[in-house]
Image 1 (cartoon, rainbow, N blue to C red):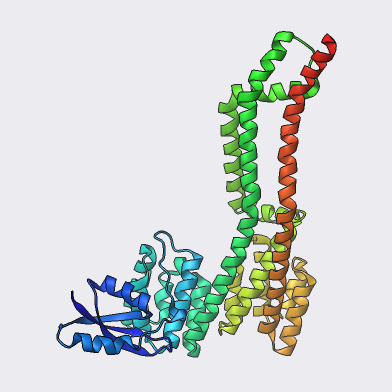
Image 2: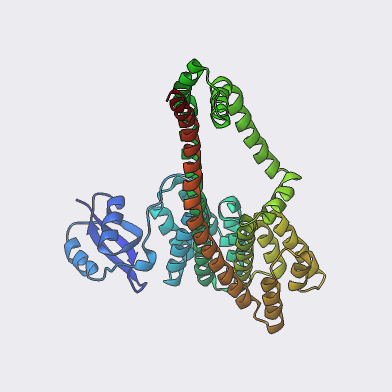
Length: 420
């Protein structure tokens, strides 16, 4: 079996060299990872003579580095979690004294998601040719985003790239956690609604027609609930080829309208005015606005550039337009708090805290405090909604099934009474 000479990192971040038997470089990487060495480079194969002696000396220095515990990425599209993990790993490697090109090479070797591997390979090549990391990432701005690229450039300019990368990783991980909580809350009622709809369609198209044939034969006067049930069942059975395309077409038309230039602002304004949901969307937008702006400013990105980036981070077009107008006001010499207050769209706590931060010179810290506060409120609101939605969905489904059962049983009971 060949013996490979390798370079790696110890727990203390020191460079480690040694030799190890392995069938291939890929096997070597896996073996070293299990033994506690993060592989950064394979120097080549060593001859068998004396290899065991040097290998024994090298193995004594191996230790597991928790900071650079690389996960295998699943194949497919690059998502926020991939970016966060890669960013934290890159920060750890740079903090350990590894050069940027070596760190990128190590990440390319470890990543198994093909798209991310191609992106990192291209970034490494551009950096190796003399480009800055920010300029190299700019070619893949659709993957990383403007916020990421601008923060990297600010970190390179200030000489604190590793610190900026850590901040970026924390920001990305936090946003991913918040999004997962929101999606998790939405997923339960959606699943319940789909299941309930499926059960209802099954009842109307299979069960109800068989039962109502009895009523047709008896030619008895039926209660209005039973007549409604039979009408709905016949409608679904006889006109499903019209109803379902019409339903799908309406959904598609609504989605297209909400994404159009005229429709999106109207839809977003309706969402903000909606009870319960409007408050949650506003809190999410405020949390994202303040957290993103604080992260950018702490990383050294200029205020106007930061406001331009933050505008694109907010998904609600009404609030994004407020940020855009605030940026124009700031360019003319006005404070941040004043246009936010004039808009009437941001809660008083936000513009008051921003104003205090501007006066005291602690704007970033105040923004972080606001972000922490609203993220906590979002979590509380989501928990309350989840607790409320579960019984509501159960009651709604139970009510529908009870209506069907009542509509079927009522005529039968009436006929029994008449016979007696």
